[in-house]
Image 1 (cartoon, rainbow, N blue to C red):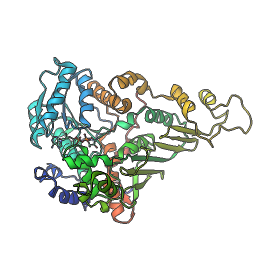
Image 2: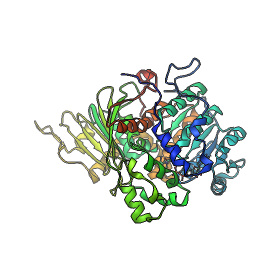
Image 3: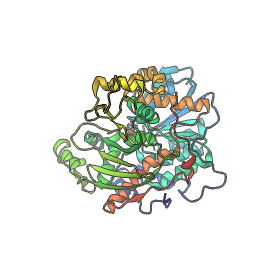
Image 4: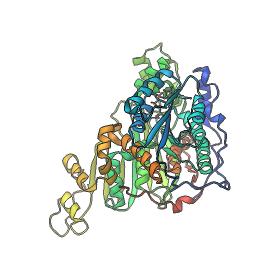
Length: 494
Ligand SMILES: NC(=O)c1ccc[n+]([C@@H]2O[C@H](COP(=O)([O-])OP(=O)(O)OC[C@H]3O[C@@H](n4cnc5c(N)ncnc54)[C@H](O)[C@@H]3O)[C@@H](O)[C@H]2O)c1
C-alpha cells in the first residue's frame, strides 16, 4: 500500500473558514489549529514515541473528568460521566457561563458529594487551558465546533489527560497527524467518540461479521443523510450548532461528516487492524441548491443565511473508498435534502448482506452450510437438495428481530440496562461513555484507537481534494506508519 504521508498541502477548508470567520466573530480571529504547539509530520515516528494501537494506559481507580463544550451535545457526555461509577467531575468549560452553571447543577444533582469540587470556566476561548492547569483532569470530553477538536485534544494530552473528542476528530490531514504525534509522544489516548459503533444493530452486525455470517466481506455502504437545514436559525441567532455548521455548508465541498456511517463499517472490515486498511478514495458532489432555497423561502429573503453563497458546496457528496484488499465502501453525506435520515449501515459479503434504515438482512445458506440457529432463523428445517434460503427478499420486521436473540453483541447484552437508563441516541451514547470509563478504570485498550479516528475523519479532507480535482483519486496516509499490519482486530468484548 502506498503511504502518502505528506500533510495536506492546500488547506482548502482553512482558507475558506478564515474568509468566513472574517464576517463572523472578531473573537475567533485566530484560528485555533494555527496555535497548536506541534506540527503534523507523518514522517518517521519520533524516538520515545509509542505506537498507540492496542495501548493500555495504567489503571485509574478514580477518573477525574472534565468537559469542554456544553452546547447541544456535551450535556449527554456530562450526564454519563457524572453518573458512571468511579468518576469525579472536576471541570466544565464553555464560552458561555449560563451553560456552565446549568450543567454544573446537573452534575451536583447527580452526586453532589462525589463531585463537590467541580469548577466552571468560561468567557474566553482559551479558558479551557486554565481548567486543564488548575483541575488536572485524567480525561476530558470535547464537544465543541469541529475546528476546535484538534487544538483542544492536543492541549488536553499535553496536559496529561486522555482526550475523548467528538466527531470528526479533526478536519485536515495536518491536524490528524498532530493529534497522532501528540498521542504517541504523551502516551495519552485520543479516542474520537464515534457513538454509532455502539448502536445495537451495528454491534450485532459486528458480531455477525466476526462469526463469518456474511461470508467474506467485499463491500460496505455508509452515510450521514440527515436534513438539518433548520439549524440555519441558529446562524441567525449566532449561538448553537447552526451558528458554525452553516459556514461549513457554505464554504466547503466534500464529505463533511463521514464517521457515523463509516466507523461501524470500518470495524466490520477490520480496517487498520491487521486484515485490511484504507487505501484511496474518489469523491464527487452534486450541485448545491437546498440551503439557498431554504434560506430564502423559510428563513427569509433578508436573513443572514440568505446572504451566504452556498453555491461552492455540494448537497449530496458521494465518496468511494477502495481498501488494500480491494474491497469498496460507498460513503455519502447530505445534510440538506428533503428525505428521511439514513446511515445506510450496509455490509455485504459472499453469504449475504446486512443493512440499516430500515434494518434488514438477506442471507444465502443451505441446510448443510447453516448452523442450527441459522437453520431456524432462515427456515431451513431439513436437508432438501438444492434448497437455499431466500436471499431475493429482505428479512425485515419480526424476522429481523429474531436475529437479536442469537446475535446480539455481548457488550450490548451486558450494558442494555445502562443504555435504557442513561440513553442518548437510543442508548448507544451511554454504552460508549460507560464503556470508555470502564476501560480507563480497568487499564484496558479503548475500543477505538487514535488511528481509526484519524482514518475515518480523513475522508473529509481527502474528499474535498478529490472534488476540487474533479474526482481524482486521493491516497489515505498510513497514520499507523505500517503498524496496522500487526494491530489486533477489535475483539467481541463482553
Ligand atoms: N456523535 C453525535 O451523535 C453528535 C451529535 C451532535 C453533535 N456532535 C458533535 O458534537 C460537537 C458539538 O456540537 P453541538 O451540536 O453540541 O454544537 P453547539 O454549538 O451546540 O455546542 C458547542 C459548544 O462549544 C462551546 N465552545 C465553542 N468554542 C469553545 C471554546 N473555545 N471553549 C469552550 N467552549 C467552546 C460553545 O459555546 C457551545 O456551547 C460537534 O463536533 C458535533 O459534530 C456529535
